Image (cartoon, rainbow over all chains, first blue to last red; front, side):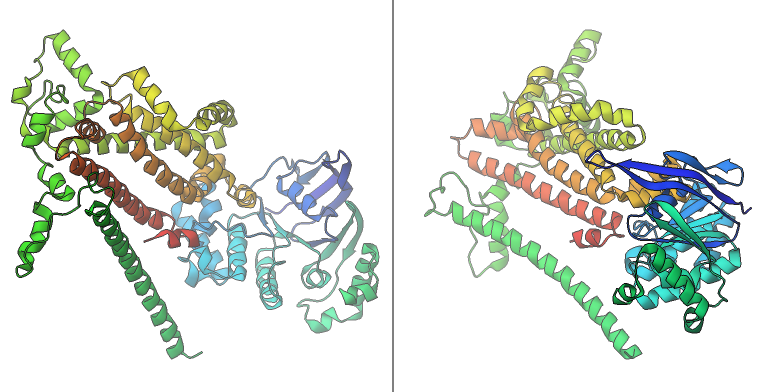
Length: 258
Length: 360
């Protein structure tokens, strides 16, 4: 059952070692409809990951709240599975057991657990590696294991914190396709944190722009799918890119140098 | 790359694996050979330790009869021959140990299993109980069975005590260490205690155990001390192992619906195995020394006590052979047990690259 995700007056304040208070999130308010693919974009240290961690229930907000439908988020749960930037696949479990982990925790019966696991392993193309150890897989394959595990628990909302940041360009592009296929199949709500504007243009329905913890813009991405090179070079895509760069305080020249 | 090349790569990997296994066996053989070469050199007439260290083997027999010559290595008066000939029963020990082990066999003289069990419980306890309850009186020394005078029974008793102590300590240390992850109060109580005792070198604590619990109740001395020492080590190792599990992995488990119980079962338990196994190897290596030390300090049965007796009889003809043989026995035993542990650890940690490399 998909639900609306509402961010209501969200503040998250950290105390720096020097005693100075840092606003990681500054009165963030927005709403995400079920099945939307939202990319959260911003510079490093501007609150993207904090926003996702608060939504995951791993970090309590200083003020405000997040609601899933009518339910207020108060801690982590399988309805908001998260794929992390770092490698979080359990190295001591076979690929199959990794995907089964959440289902075991949720006490899903054996038969359903096995069929669900087989389905998601097939969906991410890892059926032949079900009995492998994670150390025997490439970085991209391990990300696919994490994605399958997150999908398998039946979350309404999937949270992804720069999941493909450490991968090479070709693997990343391949995983974008895998992720979009899964999203189209399941229509889950996806929050995807990235600092890569091109990645956001390929994936998102909507871009939430954060700067110094504040929501500075909420940009709809009305580009046709699939978003190949031509679509990403279209006037609409260029306009979105310019808007994002302007908000981030980066000129086009600087962007091309980067 | 063609499919033939792939097959070549696989065959090469198999060859390398086989070569590594053979190399490790060769290294062990070289190590053992070097050990005995050093021993032989130290026992030569030219060596300053000639009178202290007996040769490991007897003299090699006549060259023309190789088989007889090789057999001579094990039947002449070398340390290994001495150990072997005294393993089951020994007339020499019957004469020399008559004052050393008066409590060796109290009431249950005819049942070796009960004897081992009661040795774990403490001889004094069984003797006293028998006297108080009007049960069978201790058997006179002259009627003790032959095996009471062999090295074997003493060594078996020591091995059982040390392994039992290490097992109890490991269970206790892991139970406290891992439960402290789920219940922080346990950590608040145990960490200061473990830190306090952990800073005192355990070999200094050993005599106090002997004084506190006496020499006649081995379960409180040898087993007690080894348990205490292993508990401390395993507590620290299990805590450290759990702390070294990346936070991201635990958080990922939480967002996948993990409960404290499922995270303990599927994350902490398997994830801490490599460090805990490494800690257990260290604990067991220390436990051998500690267990024997306590017996040298005054337990009435056990390999350490044999060492103490032979040390007392050092001026006598066989004493150096006996001492060297016993010490070598414990050394070899510790190495063999460690090798077995490595095989088990390699299996348990086969998921990690480091665990794979731990193997022989």
